[in-house]
Image: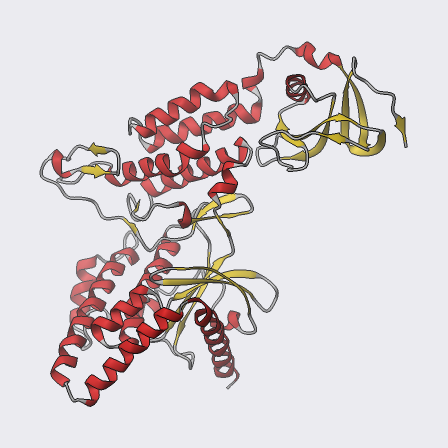
Length: 490
């Protein structure tokens, strides 16, 4: 049975990867986990069946609660309601959710979008641990064809697993309980597909024999991203920082009217995001919630933050209007906009950025108006309309040599620059580059390299001097006429 062999091989490889990583990461937690198992074995041997039955009942209750959280997320528009799902499942012999979850994972509701499964993990190679938390472990692996992906698994030695074993004395049942965060994330990734949400490549579920089941392992297979490094981002050009904020606003606009309704990110932190080819993507969705907050008065609709509180209106329907959306906007303001948006913003955008900072920091604008403000800045920035005040004659002070590059450069540094060794900035045109060069006392020439940023703007290299011109069909060299040195063409 070749299929069975492949499944066993994949499961064994996956277990080996996780085991080797966890041994080096969490030795202290292993000791606590072992103590819990030892306690469970002694209790069983002692024949404390009454205590075991009580703990098992409490664990089953928790499992049923987790299933009830996931089922509404699976109901697509036009499908049967939660009530009909619930009533139909009560006719089954198994407890609430067992037969239903089997239908979801193995029947008509299985994800058709999945490109990868357990077979895809055969002959994978572990590269590094990307992160570990209370519930999950994230590992970067290279698949057999060399493609890098990120795997999310239950953190066997995490706090959630350790506390569950301590409380219920059932490692297998606890693994199933903790895995529900992964199962919820799979569903959310299927329902909330967007360019700024990490792509679900597939998942592997089942036991070592390749069979599905509640107690089997669950592994989520995601596209590989780079963790968002805020310190590094703070040192990046404003254009790249603006891109992160714009991507975030586009994401929040989608979440405000998603297929699940208005979705709030309850654990809103930079660590929940990665970048893929420079594009911001949300990678952790297990704490996302589409629940509306019920209310009787406006006082029931208070958003509390460490230094600010906001009270929103209670609607006639008895729900807080726009609470999820406003929560996301203010978190974007305090975790992202405050640090990334105002600093080094182009002079022509200062008033526009100030307006965004004021409207989001005071929750005066909804997500639609916030997105419009960001898209307006992007349009101005890409079109160069904010540079209309630059005199056209500024470029006449330079001699241009097309199809040429330079060698023997004397570089100087500027900040923020795309190059740590010199001064490499994005410009809309040679006219803007000439304006920048005139504002730098060290600058006597610049080159338009032909390379472009994500906005389509040109990269310009500024320098004090150079010794030679060299043929380069993609570049143009501009030299100040009053500073033009004697150069030779090689």
